[in-house]
Amino acid sequence: MLDTLRRGHPYLLELGGGLLVLAVLNVLLRPKDPGFLAVQPNPALLLVAVVACRHGLRAGLASGLATAAVVAACIVARLDYRTLTELRTLGHYVTPLLLIGTGFGLGAQRESLRRAERALEGRVEALEQELADQAVRFMAATEAKHELERRVADGSASTRPSRSPRAVSCRPTPASATCSRAS
Image (cartoon, rainbow, N blue to C red; front, side, top):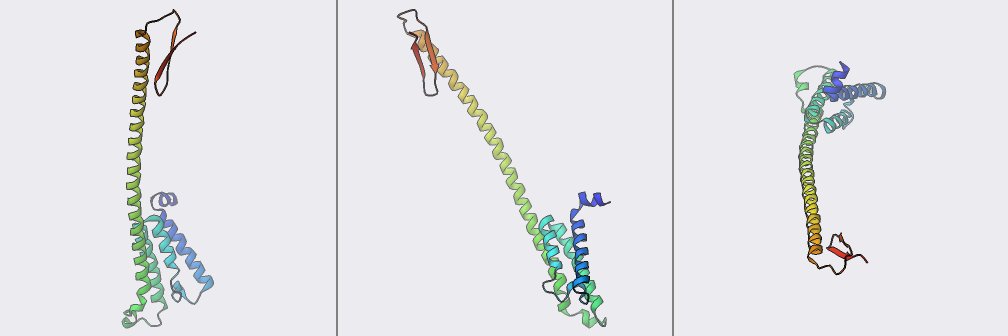
């Protein structure tokens, strides 16, 4: 089951591990403050930000919702009396909404960066293909040039009247073909 999570949804393992670390730190450092409610910004915000930035929108929303649910449960558990008026105060909803908003915002940013990265990778592949095509055309043009230089050298050697029976050596060079008589 752990391998399935690791392959399919690795952010769930990070989220679970992060929540476990936060719970242990909460018990060790602030046992009378469940959910780090007195600490602003809430340390769960860091967990949401890391998961959303690493894995994208779905992971950001899942981590935001999960941590918001944990923080909301801590808020409800911390209430001295459970009245409807106490739950209606807007101050209790700021941290959970901030967690969800952070997960959504950073996750959406990561997704847009992924899309831009994929588009750039596609452009790089197209340019690499074009470069390979240009290299093939360049090699064909170079071979054609060498063939023409060889023909010109052969043609000029056969049209010159020979004064002596000495051999003619032709050397094609990149600039021009040169022929000289061996002495």
